[in-house]
Length: 170
Ligand SMILES: CC(C)(COP(=O)(O)OP(=O)(O)OC[C@H]1O[C@@H](n2cnc3c(N)ncnc32)[C@H](O)[C@@H]1OP(=O)(O)O)[C@@H](O)C(=O)NCCC(=O)NCCS
View 1 (spheres, helix red, strand yellow):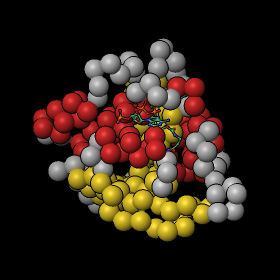
View 2: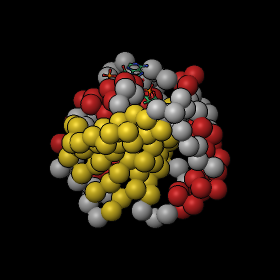
View 3: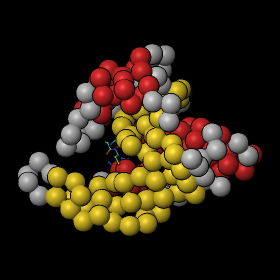
View 4: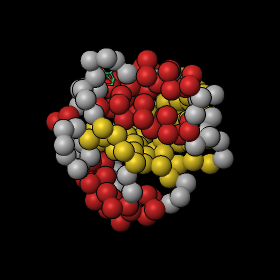
């Protein structure tokens, strides 16, 4: 990966961020990833077997964030690569560990890994009104590139729009 991409990612991490380790996850972490995903508040949860199958896919990249000396991640981010593009499928930090810079540390490490693996553009979709996620993505320079009206079903029967975002890593 180029020095400029590394410098850019380093600058985005605030100096007062919580100390956190990040590491690549594999299918052995599927149960924990499924549990974290269930805490993400999504309309449809992921089952452990579904996570294991996804994480065993060679095109899928999963990173975890760990605080303290723990071996169980406090958050994960998962992307699928295709040629020089990647789509972030999900990112979740455990509710008790939110607002402490873990999401930022996780996404910085993940984007650095994707850049190192030759990814030039990263895409994602976020529910309109999901302020924490939108702020996190905008912090890294993701820009809105479109909207899908009524994309996400809500528990109360209504539907929320999806904001499509893109980040150029080149
Ligand atoms: C989105 C999420 C991963 C952020 O993780 P986090 O560890 O709390 O994030 P951080 O502490 O690193 O903060 C990242 C940014 O989000 C902002 N943020 C975090 N929680 C916030 C909140 N409740 N309200 C407003 N902004 C918030 C922070 O201020 C920070 O913004 P900045 O970079 O402009 O200073 C976490 O809220 C989460 O797991 N949400 C549920 C799952 C989800 O919605 N995932 C996204 C699906 S698209």
